[in-house]
Image 1 (cartoon, one colour):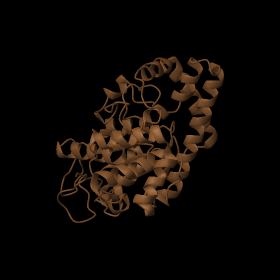
Image 2 (cartoon, helix red, strand yellow):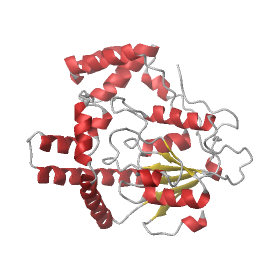
Image 3 (cartoon, helix red, strand yellow):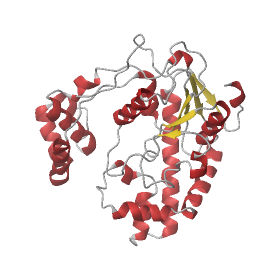
Image 4 (cartoon, helix red, strand yellow):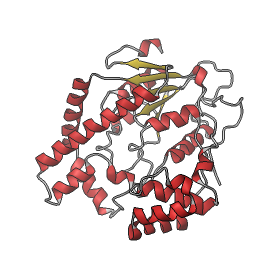
Length: 322
């Protein structure tokens, strides 16, 4: 069994001092802000986006370019194979490893760090886990993981939901019978540990950052401007090789239910390459999906992030004040 453990400090005190958190919807300019801050402050950048952690999808996930990666140290980008269902817990364990290896500042006296950690991305749950802690979860042996994914494929979500209803009714009643991924997650946790996932979720860990010395920033771009940026960026992705990435991903013959296979643009471009729709239609659908995703992100950040988060608009001069 493994979980996120934070050594040292009082309850609620995180290990990373003087961190900078930059959240925002896709295409809002947060990566550019993080890079500017990293260069000015000698900081390191930590990916806080679930899709940018996957390999192969460099362009489609808008991962920093080789030139940008060379301008400041970057961590947790492209380090996960698309065959892996990367989770919030796995990301937090990776951050903990960076801390344990001395790559992120953990100065106990709270003085200004020479290399502040700049966490940037669009995955709200990563930021919440970083700042508030996360429920510890058991390690799932690969045979158990494989078994339940096989059962999902063979029997379907509704059948597994009935099994979960029998074995752990409290969890089953909270899930839709069609939500195969969450049903499988609940079953594999129960199978591996003998305990309900609800029990594990009730045991929260400690935050990894020291909230009192952290700067919280969230970018809230104008909607019309964001739409324009999204459309221009997807056109640029096509020019930079997005189709080749989708071909590489398709060649891996992965389960279509894996998170990497659900990256925006993958499904649409695969359909176009298979002749199921035209490329102009696929491109338009991908842009629409990106706009919808950005809207969901903005809504989540607006309602889920607390008053400590400073709301920014693209172009605001915050670098000089940090």
